[in-house]
Image (cartoon, rainbow, N blue to C red; front, side):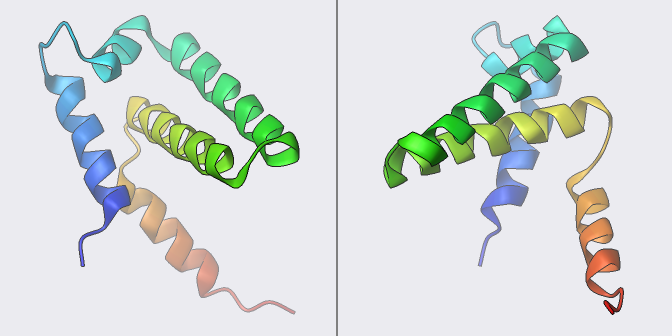
Length: 97
């Protein structure tokens, strides 16, 4: 089964290298870290609002937007999908008291 998160991360990496003037992803990278952080913050707030007051459908949509912007943020710091996977595995292997 394909991993939609890996697919999304790969698309973001490809768009980062593209020269398309129509790419929203590329425009975020060109605007820099402050813009990327701002968009992540905006999407976080929107998810919280929809979680508290919105519908399930809107919460799913905002969660998807947040995941996209999180992946852009990670990619801008040269953090790979595999880096995150390794950290999750490491944390999963820690015994909890």
